[in-house]
Length: 230
Image (cartoon, rainbow, N blue to C red; front, side, top):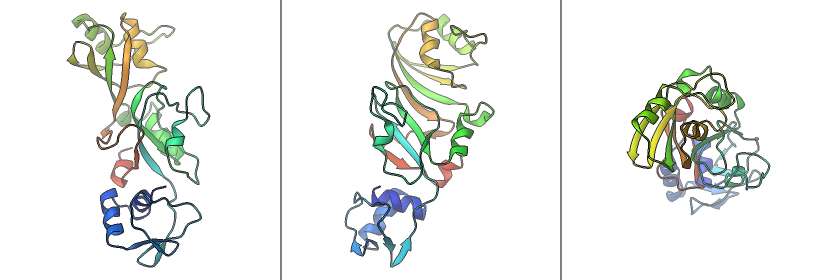
């Protein structure tokens, strides 16, 4: 784990605040002064803040900007695992709402299984809302939009999808906000109206947006306020 991420978790600081402590020469690893925020710290290292030992955090909570061609599994499944992008953890991480290998964007992970379950459980109304940016093979008609927003019957299912919200960006791009998390739901919704999804990017879950400073493959610890959203 990077030392600035470690400080964010243990002292409940922002990454910027963690870097200030480092710049002020207040942080040591195994008695050695830390000079760079990207310096790595391992489970067996001793981290000191003004001489006081900092303990490793209990539960960990992460936001990851998932790149394309990574799978949401602990086992490589034709693609490398997203867990290879995160720091080593003493706790096994869980994913709160998996994404397909070719889907990008906001991914939440935590060692706190109950927290992850709250996000994905259909009983949690406040966390149902998810916003995606969609690239499409064909232009959407007004009739297409009405069908998607009013609920659509997916192949092999007996109940229509819940109401969705479509916002047109241009002829072949839109956003869609959905309240559920059915298997391949968005791709199947557009397939049901004779269209095809060419790109899919999750931007938001509930009121938590993907941090615009995170490049694909980058991650950061969630703040206490962000954790409490769910």
